[in-house]
Length: 461
Ligand SMILES: Cc1cc2nc3c(=O)[nH]c(=O)nc-3n(C[C@H](O)[C@H](O)[C@H](O)COP(=O)(O)OP(=O)(O)OC[C@H]3O[C@@H](n4cnc5c(N)ncnc54)[C@H](O)[C@@H]3O)c2cc1C
Ligand SMILES: NC(=O)c1ccc[n+]([C@@H]2O[C@H](COP(=O)([O-])OP(=O)(O)OC[C@H]3O[C@@H](n4cnc5c(N)ncnc54)[C@H](O)[C@@H]3O)[C@@H](O)[C@H]2O)c1
Image (cartoon, rainbow, N blue to C red):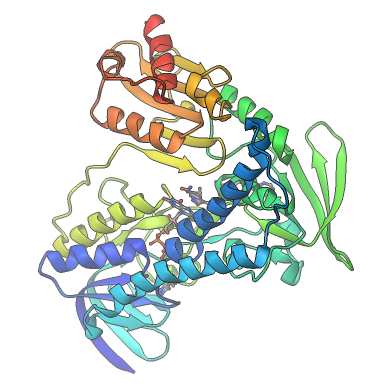
C-alpha cells in the first residue's frame, strides 16, 4: 500500500472532475484526479453526444417521412439499424477519444486509478493499493440511472441509457419507463427509426422538465399525436416472457394496459453516486439520499474541506453546469478555507425532442403567483414554423409585474434550442420585456414567435 499526499484530491474524472482539476492547478496547487471507471466522461460516452447522434439519425428518417407533405415523394426508404448504430458508435468513439487523449496528456503523477472511499475528511483509500492524504477533496462522482422496483428482475431485458449506445442493431420494440428528458429524447428517436415504442409516464404526469400546466397539456397533446404515450400512471408489474417483457400499467383513470416488448428502458431519473464513498466515515451531514449537505453558493459541504461538483450534487445534472461547478469547486478547494460564492449563469435546460423544449431562468413552478404575467405564443399559425411544417407547440414567457423584467420561460416549440439561448441571455442581462421588444426581429423567422409572446406579456402589464 503506497501513501501519497496532495493539496486537492478530485474523485471522478468526468466533466466536473476535469474542470475542478484544471481550476485547482490554475491556483498553483498540487492536484490529483482519481478515476474508478473508464476515462471519457458520461457526456461523451453514454450521455449528451451519443443521444444526439441517435436523434440526428431519427431526424433524417423523419424528414424523409415528412417529404410527401411538401409534394416530394420518396420511395424505397428503409432504416438500416446496423448502419445507424455503427455511425453512432464511430462518432461517439471519436468524441470519447478526444477526452481520453486530454486526460492522458495530464502529468502521470496527477492521475490515479481506482475506486476512492473516505477514511476520514482528509484521507482517501483507492482500491487496496493507495492511501491519499489531501488538504481538500472535490467529490465529482456523477450519477447513475434509477431502476424502478417494478423493473427489477428483468435481467438482460432491462436497459439503461448506457446499453442503448452499445447496440449493434435496433430492436423491434422497447417500452420506455419515464417520460422525463431521457425518455422523451430516446423514446421519440427510437420510434422515428421504426422501433415500436411506448413511452410510460409516471403518476404525476410529468413530461420532460416542464412545470407549467398549460405547456404540459400541450406537450401531452403534441407528443401523444405521434408517439404511443401513456402520460400518467404506474407500471404495476413487468415480467420476463418467452417473447421478451410483458409490462402492465395502471393508468391514472383506473384503466389498465398490458403489452409485450423486446426490452424495457429505465428512464426514471438518476441518483447521485454516493453509495460507495464511505461518507459515514466523514464528519459530513448527509441528506435523506445520502448526499452531503452543501452550500449551493460555494459548493462546500458544511465547514469541511470537501466540495461537491456536477451531477453528484443533485442540483442541475447538465453538462455546462457540471463544468461550472467543477471550476468553482476546484478553485474553492485550492483556496480553502478562503472559499467564495460562485457567480452562476442564468438557468438553461434544453430537451432535443421534436418539438424541442427549453426551460429558462425561473421555471413556472418556482414563481410566486400574482407577481408575474405570462406571455404566450401558439405555434399552429406561426408563419415560418408553418412554412417548414414545424408548427407545433406553445411558448410561455414569464415577466415580472413590477420591474417588467424577464423572469423565465417554458418553451415548447420549433428551434427551442436557439430561442432558449436568446431568452437565457436576456434573463442574465436582466432585460425588460421592452428592452427585448426593441431588438431586431427579421421576417420570416421563428423568433417572430418569441416577439408574439413578449407582446402578449407587455399588453398585460
Ligand atoms: C443519456 C443522457 C443524455 C444527456 N444529454 C445531455 C445534453 O444533451 N446536454 C447536457 O447539458 N447534459 C446532458 N446530459 C447530462 C450530462 O451528461 C451530465 O450532467 C454530465 O455528464 C455530468 O458530469 P459529471 O462530471 O458530474 O459526471 P460524470 O461525467 O459521470 O463523471 C463522474 C466520474 O466519476 C467516476 N467515479 C464515480 N465514483 C467514483 C469513485 N468512488 N472513485 C473514483 N471515481 C469515481 C465515474 O467513473 C465517472 O467517470 C445527459 C445525460 C445522459 C445520461
Ligand atoms: N438534453 C439534455 O440536456 C439532457 C438529456 C438527457 C438527460 N439529461 C439530464 O439527465 C437527467 C436525468 O434524466 P432522466 O430522464 O433520467 O430524469 P428526469 O428526472 O428528467 O425524468 C425522469 C422521469 O421519470 C418519471 N418517473 C420516475 N419514476 C417512474 C416510474 N416508476 N414510472 C414511470 N415514470 C417514472 C419522473 O416523474 C420523471 O418524469 C435529466 O434531469 C437531465 O438533467 C439532460
